[in-house]
Image (cartoon, rainbow, N blue to C red; front, side, top):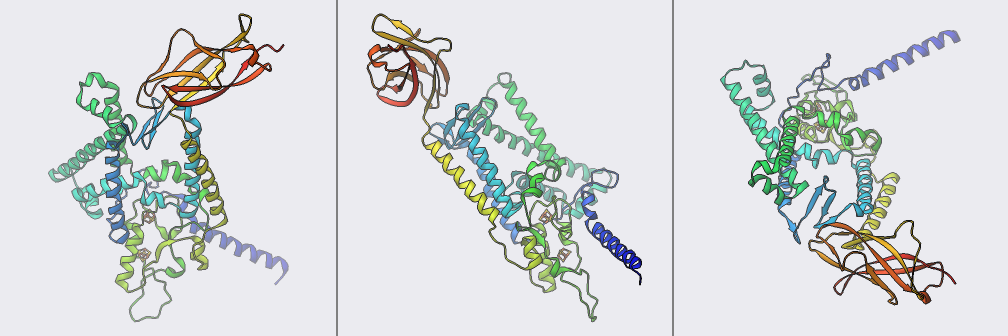
Length: 482
Ligand code: SF4
Ligand code: SF4
C-alpha cells in the first residue's frame, strides 16, 4: 500500500476511535431527569434494600435526633449553637461571637473550606450520601413517607398514570398534607437555629400581630422546604448545590467514589444456558439504575449527578448474591484502583491539605482560647493632638468602642496599667455595657509631663469589672517634647 493509502487508513481508524469515544461519553450530553424536549422526567427510585441502606437509616435517625434536639440545649444561659445572621450574632458551644470576632469567623470559614477540599479529594461525595441534610431529609424522611403512602416505584408510576379517582386524590392529598406539615415543623427548628428556641416559643405562643416578621419567615421557609422535598428533589443536588458543582475540580482519579468495576463487569449480558461465554459479572439487570435517586447509570463511569448514596451498591450486591458471584461489582473505589488494581492511598495532595487544615485549626484554637469576654477598641480622637493641663500635665482625648459578650451588664472601669496618671470619663461617671451589647464613649488620659519622654508614649489601659481585669489595651499618647 502507498504512503498516501496508509495515511487515509490511519485517519479512518482514528475517526472510528473518536466516534466510539464520543458514543461512550454521549450519556454526559443529557440529564437523566430531563427528556429530549427539555421537560422534567420524574424519577421513580425503587426502595433500596441492603446493609448500606440499613446503616444510613440508623444514622439518619441519629441526625434527626440531633437536628431536632440541639436547639433545646443551652450552655450557661445560651443556646449551644445559634446563627443569628440578621443581628450578626453567632453562638458556638455557648460562646457569643460578634462582628468584632470577624478574624475567628473568617478563619472558621477558611478551615471549613479547606476541610471540604481535603475531605472531597480523599472521599469524594461521601458527605453527600451519608451526612448531607438534603439527602437525609429527602431519602430517609420524605421518600420513606412516599413509599408508605404511595407504595414502591412501580406503584407510584401506576398511580401517576391513573385517572383522578378517589384513591389517587386520597393518596396524593395525604402525601402533600404530610409533606407540608413536616416542612412546617422543620422550618420551626430551622428558625430556632437562627433566633433561638426561646424566641421561637414567643412567636408560637404570643399574639400573631406581635410577630408578623417571624411568622412570615416561618411560612417562607415552609414553602421552600415543601417545594424542595415535594417537587424539586434531586434537582437540588444535580443542578443547584454549589458543593456538587465543585466535585469535578476537587476530585481526582485517586478519590474514593461509588464506582462500577468495569474490568470485572464487562462485557455485560445474560449468559445463555449451557453455552460458553466470555461475559463479565454484570447481567445487565438495571437493578442499580432502578434504585438511583438521581436516575443515572453508574456503569457509565463517575458522574456529577452521583450523590454517593450507595443504593446501587446494595442493589448490585443483592443481585450478586442471587447469581452466586462475589459482592462488590459496584463498590467504594477510586478510578485508579479499578483501572490498575492498586489500593486506595493517601496522596501528596491530601497530605498537603491535611497540613494546611491542621495549621489553620491550631491558629483558630489559639484565637478562641485567648478571646476576651469584653472586646474594646481605643483610638485617639481624630484631629486632636494634646491639651496642656496647667503647668505640669498633658491630656489626650480618646474614643472607646466596646462589646460585651457575656450575659450580664458590666460596669466598666478604665485604669492606667502603670499608674502615675489619671482617667477622666467625658459626660458620665462610669461606663455601663449592657449584656450582649455594644457601645462607645470618650475619656481623657491625663499624664504628668515628667512621664512623657518622647512625642509618642506607649500606654496600657486596663479594663476592670470591679477587681476583675477583663482586658488590656495598648495605645499611644501624644505629648510635647522639651
Ligand atoms: S445491578 Fe449489578 S448486575 Fe445489575 S446491571 Fe447493575 S451492575 Fe450490572
Ligand atoms: S449512582 Fe449509585 S451512589 Fe450514585 S446516586 Fe445513583 S444510586 Fe446513589
